[in-house]
Image (cartoon, rainbow, N blue to C red):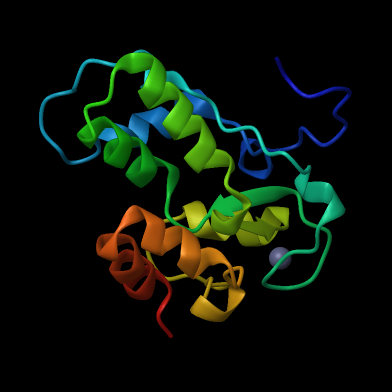
Length: 153
Ligand SMILES: [Zn+2]
């Protein structure tokens, strides 16, 4: 279900859950469309609403979370584990909600992360939660390398 009364639905980018537009990114540039499994339809839902946090980049009120290891990457990772479907869903839900991977962002800063190309408000390694590296190491060496590539200065 959607979260309660929301005067904040001004832009899709400001929302933490946009499953349809997000899932299109899954097959970006990767040839034929893979069949959707139930776990790929798992929707991210934060434990703590972003609006009670400050934007990690500009310190304004946060409105959304940016996934340091992006959602699509986590989805691909889990499908690569070839778990039975209920386990895959549980694992994916847990990874998507893991606060160590979540960077609170305001609408403007979050929107900027979703744009391709040069960013006005880039996320840097220093913006990631301190506990992020623990999360990355649990995923594997690739996750640390990925973050260093995405968020290096
Ligand atoms: Zn911001």
